[in-house]
Image (cartoon, rainbow, N blue to C red):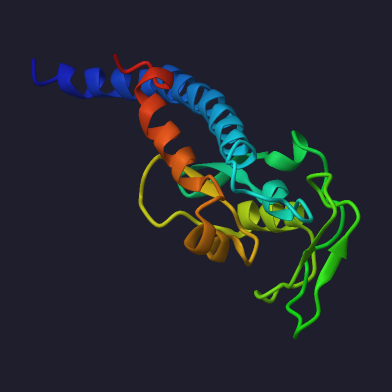
Length: 180
């Protein structure tokens, strides 16, 4: 019996690498796509949210990592209209006027958070390529809103939708991974 132990262990390891891990990865990919969809809707359906340039919405990204290495990313920018202009830079007492803004309204805004003046989609791509998950998990899923002002919006207005995205992921994980 003791002689069979290494043979059994090898067979289990081969089955894990040939079937279990690839199947799990495919389920995770499907789940990431749905998480992104939920994140977009959480932002768009929030009645208090307002998109001036569209960069926050376009920056949303759901990333899948395997052994801390990037596998695939799902970008909101692939599913929503592109931002209408680069991110606003911080200004002293000078409003930026939109006719119309991303949401189709005439509006004005005084930017209070400094940005690099780039595009939200570029922030999303940069995040995916340069972020490394902290743990030692086989797979990691990361939901990110990498524009400079995302934290400010969430802390002051609670309209990014990130908390609803986390709740969606928590609520649907067992279903997507077919753990029941």
